[in-house]
Length: 493
Image (cartoon, rainbow, N blue to C red; front, side, top):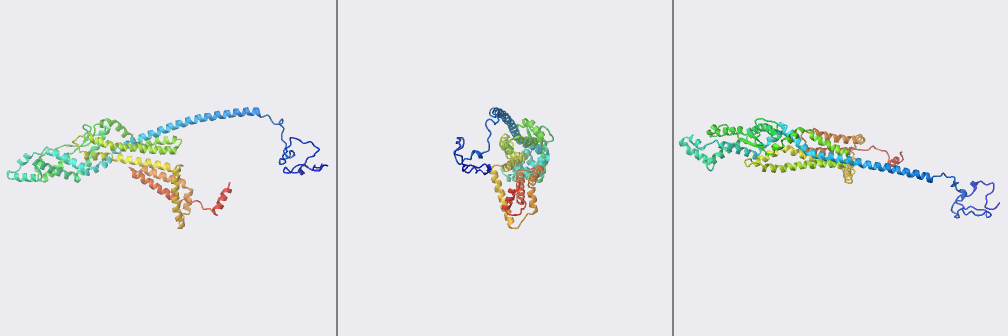
């Protein structure tokens, strides 16, 4: 047996491993197919490799099948890619259309709500315009109108003829002390009495009752319905000041001007609303009044449908809320611009300050609604943005939670523990948040006449409630240090 050659009794397992250099019989010819590098394993240690002829022939058939498979996958992906953008484009189109229509209907909804509540509700209308009876411009305009009507029926010569000749100089002197000529003095005297009447509580009562009747004329002027003692003449709503003139005559007689008692019954009109365009807007305004409650509901439903159809609903909600706020803000600007146009179109005989006070009272509820809708749109947009995954929104939420955690840490150091309440809040936090949001929304819907400050107050109350929930939220207590807890979490399946 040659040295270095395994004997006949040795097993192949006794042959050195692949890391050793095998010895070969010098009498055997060297095989050029064996590796010459001693670091490579010997052929005897390799697993048997199947011969080329024994392998299944896969090159030609598998290549064709693979190409067919790739072609089918590419066709399916192309069909899906073509169908998905088409569906997305259709959804995006309808989403944008619904949101735009909802934004356009928003200012019309404000006008419809005003037409239903202000023009269609007598008590609401009277409560709105009653305070302007204390407006100095309105009082001065009414006193001037009453004075002019009375002076047309007062004859100075007839007044002096009714006085004894011996008393005429004393009467003339008394009238002269009132200023200027006798006519101007008498006019100033009558105006003072009229001013005293319109500043009294009796005028407040008259104004309230007159506006109850005027509401019918306003409804008739803007919608074509209504009627009553208040007339609509030449596209103007006018109030009969006859009762006020009677009160002024009583004052004049009581103060010694007995001739005023002989003045016949006078009916003069005080213009509340006058516009040449009343007849033109009558039909459209009547439709808005009939829409009433439903037009705002339709606007909200359309905007909500647009948000639900959008691919990015949070972004669509922000856009819809800001769009509604902007469109409604345009209505507020239009009301201010129309005020100047309306006053400029009034005749010279109408008091501009009094007409401005009446206009402001008439559209006050509409302006309140405009501010409320703008505030609501901004609050909804902020809420949707802050709850999103944006970098700035995450930063704001992190700043909020860090402040709550700082307060909570201070309370923990002071020994204030939430106990089972905190753990219960932690388990049901999501439901608690949704209940708070629903409560804020329900409070807004049940509010009789919400204003912008009501919306802001409800939003601040909701934030405070969420802060309390965040403060009370306490995770379940775990035993052991954080390292053991982390190891237990890593080891758990």
